[in-house]
Image (tube, rainbow, N blue to C red; front, side, top):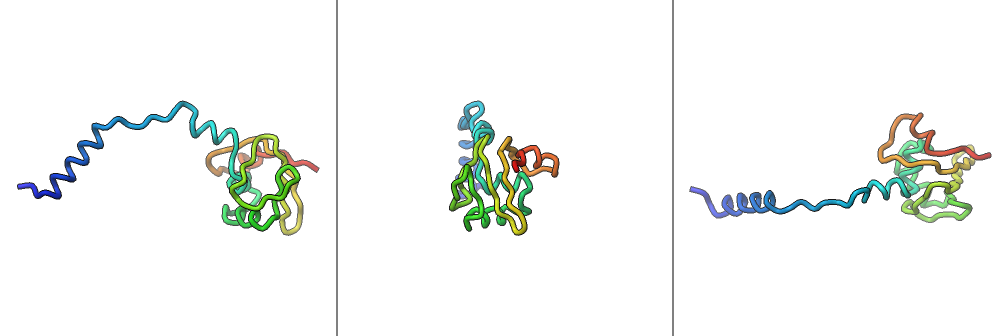
Length: 118
């Protein structure tokens, strides 16, 4: 004999399986990744800093500029062609954004995301 709670649980599962799945438009989230990316994620993916937390701290403390303007938070998006200036401990790096990735990869992949300007 099935109790009430078990019957409700099985009905919920059946309803969820019968419901149509929400479809995403082609290129929806993936296109957004190709168009722009948060500055903290980009700095981390490009291997400018070791951790994403360190990238967020740099951006929040004002050590990062995008196109010459100081940013005040890690959520600022960067786009292709933007010039990012990062003041690190012993150097200032000026980088031109040339690409984005969804996941952090090896060093070679990170170096393809920017062009060093001097």
